[in-house]
Length: 318
Figure (cartoon, rainbow, N blue to C red):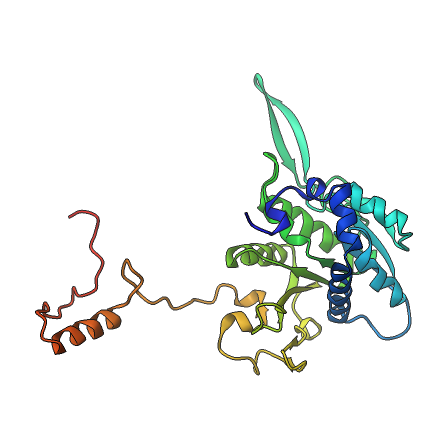
């Protein structure tokens, strides 16, 4: 069974009283959360003027990441879907304001059509709407961070959950509550490339500019992905920060290698065509087959002649 918690149960169920206390009491988890939060705050690139900002901690849990925000002199609002996590945050006297909230909440309207009751998704964008997404006032947040939370929206834990709609509600409401030019930084663990593309495309459709910054891309243990978004259209100020390498140096797109997964990935690059090598059923290309046939001929074996049909996959039927 997979060790990823988001694949085991919904967050409000997985992080019950026992798991929440176990999570918060782990010295290893505390250290990791502190490092990830420090890096997210660094990528947030807030002005160094000594003025405290109002930040949003999405998926704040028991307040471990919020401690980093408080230590840096900022005020913060934390929201989480797990009551057990928030109870521990209160016990630990977290300095931020805490909200019990589903960040992917969608507004539903029940209407009578004929003899049946149907459900319609409501996408109201008026100022007074508080029913979907984060439900905060427009333009009041100076920045947002999230540690290991956004990928939970890609799961359908209930029959009413649709990942694309939940991501749309989340990024749409986040865009509205952020001040223009403000940044949002999400440390994520995408399960697959398709999941990463889903999150990126949802953010772009909401109006964000930015992309993915990958720290320590060559390390399977230390590799971390950060989705860095700016509220507003692309500009000079929305240029992505540099990623960290194993030697603690930074690398930009120009300095990175040609391997796509080791580069800083921009949202605008996601439709770039990829070259695919034709393979046979066993995953071997034509060049490999011709090489093997030549080796067999050298050994004196009878080998069919090479034709345009060599290594070509046959259809299921004629």
